[in-house]
Length: 421
Image 1 (cartoon, rainbow, N blue to C red):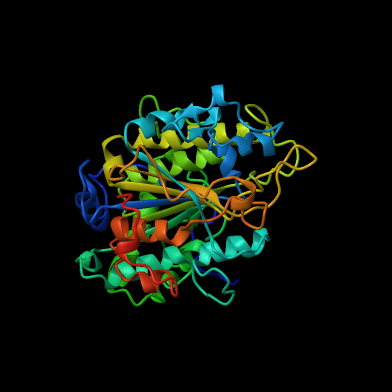
Image 2 (tube, rainbow, N blue to C red):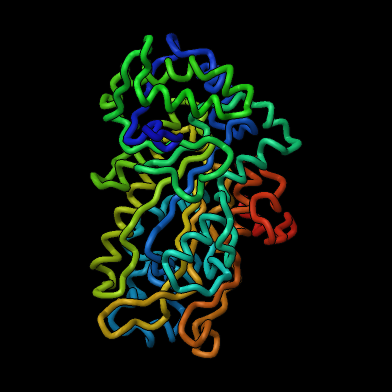
């Protein structure tokens, strides 16, 4: 049977447990990450990919632009229903759960951003954004995995941190392109369904795969912690993850995305040494019947914002050490099409949420929506490369100072940061 690191924790489970019976490496991780303030060794990054190309113009609405309404006669968000942000932009009303986070200065928005590559192919554009190398198809690893590699080479002292098996994880059936690379990553389908046979003379296939994952690693910590990590997984499973109760007021939608965000919060709060977590959410490809205040996009946005807001509330004081960033492969056309939807476009909007984020502001240079200002006469033009946003985020949250390693060829520097964090 062919086994690899993707097999380990495929549809797996981890659970919250008390510290009294935790293996040593879990306790060390807990001690390194406790406290609501900023801890250089305890920062965590959560990445959300909106697959299908979200319509940034109806997500973060430029409601002062007259041409916005002229180009979208049936799907534009009426000015009196936009959730005003700064007198220029406003949120779609279905993003009401985001408004308090913005007002409290924890949520920042970057508009007119995305990949400089002009592909309108979902497959290519997603691959370029996940690899972090727009236009280059032969990149073998993902930008988030390289960011963790860069963390290990930084001069901030974090490379001395004892990483755990749960350092890089994804909620889903497989390790995503974003996390592929030299740093071991795990995929977790469902924290409530993981079972594993006891260790004995004949280990289970999952146990063998897990041990092989560490045997192939050159990390001395992985070699030292392999056995106790496996024991930790068994112990945490025995704690019955189904009994996890979110914090008061953290009301997750009963959707796939809501459940994924709930499980990420659960894993972060278990203090298992998670440094980077990834999940995605589908349903953004609105070619037909997109809707305006109500409809297809509105429903997706309601789930999206409510799930993230519940996640943030669930973290409580722990949110001080978490940064969350959202991304989508490209935006959509400025003009609606003949079927009440929008087609593949270019510039888009990203959200950055965090305890250390300088929120309450829409960042980036706005290019305008007059016909002559549109990209190729049809799309919101791009003025901020998505790698500028991610480069700043990984420098802050992971200490990934070697940005050429993370985003080769992008020529990023701190001087080009938006000062989001």
